[in-house]
Image (tube, rainbow, N blue to C red):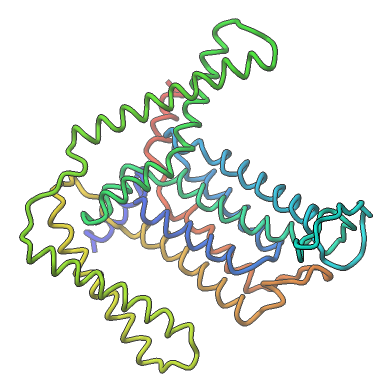
Length: 372
């Protein structure tokens, strides 16, 4: 009993949560957003994500990029609505009677401008909000999860692919850090006051800083032997390739069998199990060609489990609402959207990490420095 109490106390100490747990949570919320176009539920998802990020965001550079993803989401919503205005042809209540631009006869089914209806505007708004919420969920994962620790947690066989993915998803956080440094430096020196000159003085240092960071990353990867493989027998490589091919065929056939209602359930389950098992064995064998070590690997404690399970529960609830409560998940554009207690409770489960996850260690250091 004392050991369990001690482990629970250690798990609650200020530390960075396992990055995989944050990504599972964020993917679960993004999955819920993909299952609905209800603006009330989508806005509730945005509120849940914002609360968790505000409560458990650290002081690292990538943690400050969340607002960039929010701005990108707003841009997506505005673009989606604009395309509906330009190309929308949904009949309904006319809000603005715009002049229609004539197009050639060979352009069938496309109309530029014309009467703007309320239904077309709401349809574009609903779709844009859904895509924007998915982007915000990804931004929350980037703001909460340490990308370097995420790369360290990947299987050895996926190390090279994972490195490329981590570099890709940390572009915006790096740009956010560069923007903050350049702005702080420009406040300390006087310069041109015109908008064009100020923009040039701002963009050039930011791009130069991003290029220097990319070159430093490439040099560091080369120094650490990125891309170099260990010697593996030819027979092992052939067995690995065969297993990966079997896993690909099994997973494709299993997913198709699950989606096809006429296929027997035992056949779909067996193909999925075969594909997953072959993929696991193939990844284990493929990991032998990557020689790398991990110093003090991250452990999964009960906060990681709770955070990950909350994301899974949110995704499952979204799938159930989309299947059994279709009017709630996909409201029409000619009626007011409605919500149910189950749909709202499924979203609010995503607030669990704001309480269950430990306080980031960087936030504690920042508070101590502020007090000092």
